[in-house]
Length: 347
Image 1 (cartoon, rainbow, N blue to C red):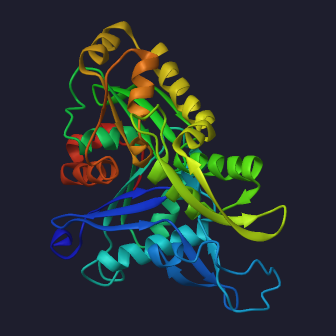
Image 2 (tube, rainbow, N blue to C red):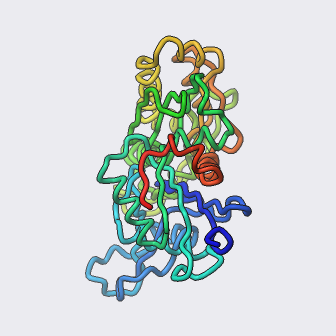
Image 3 (cartoon, rainbow, N blue to C red):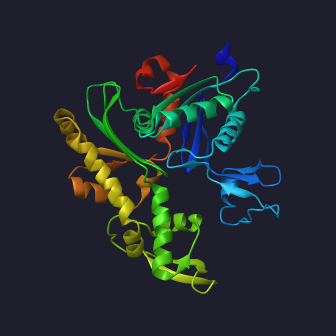
């Protein structure tokens, strides 16, 4: 009876984007993890894409004299930074996809989380989902979720290395026999690349830009390895030495230099995971290569950069941004089979 009225929900609760998969429908929500709060009543005025459009365009007046909303990213480095806002965000998304009112039937939910998450942070994610209306909440590590989403047989005695580069974290895991044999997790991802671009333009060109502009620069001309044809882009911002608007032209070589530090951190994390991998599984990885996923994996030349430094082929999958969410949903399709891969649950 429960299955007739409810819907199982797989969630990738990411720092940059939140994806929601509903059984029988696929991914029905793919929204930025951003909320806007009305300072007059402390209620949400916008969520997701609508709220992201307001980033950098609202007042910083801490006294709340005007009515402009405060725009917040409630997830930082892959974990909850503002619990109440994440709860409301999840509640909004769950209500949006639920067939019937939550007071009648509550859904089962599986959420992908970073492998470096602490016990306190796990509890916060579970509590937020429960408060948002979930009947059951199960967690699994994002590299495992990504592997399941890609239909990799994680229960077999074969080593598969997954590199999941998200907005706030990069998770590297070697998976075999329903478990993570070794892993490395760093709180460096797409957001840190954006911040590096902001710092570079401020320090080198005396130009101040916002997070959204930095993200656009990364997507349009960013790279981790030399390009056959280098790119240029016009960037508009505020000259912080003169406090006047200004436009400059930057190159892909400059942005490659700007993101060198976070890119190097990701490469070092992959090396660390490989160093801790048992020899038998290392041989599997050498034969099959490494799978790279997540939004950060789409940075031009990142696969080439990593491959050149470790001497192993890198494969970036086509649905890099959705496989964690798909994996979370697939676990719910056969919870008994995948129960060994779960790391925490609340029934």
